[in-house]
Length: 150
Image 1 (spheres, rainbow, N blue to C red):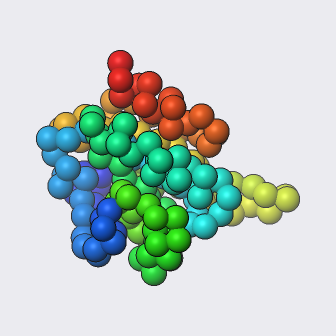
Image 2 (image 1 turned 30 degrees about the vertical axis):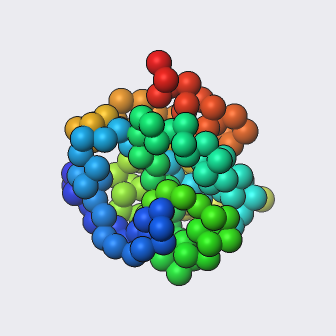
């Protein structure tokens, strides 16, 4: 399946709900970041780092966050953290699987499936031009900004 045409429910920067595909952003660079779960410490820090740097990023790209949480969870997360970018609900893991970030994980000896925190830069045609896998939250947005500004 072509990742550019996968439709997902999302909340735009103003909290409006709509259906989106990555093809909707043709002509713009996209920072597409996958995170495990709304309202957890690492995911909240990452989202707030993108929020706090949105003006530095939007001069060159659109930011889109993707997690397996549903729209109801995204609404609460967006409102609580005052997030100013698009969040997509990938409840069936279709986009996550297309990007290869839906992985087997292990915590306290228990194996489960989940998101491997990852970020992709898409060019104006929607092609992947850079990626970060197994992202460490601290300093990650600075790495994204550095890449966008080169």
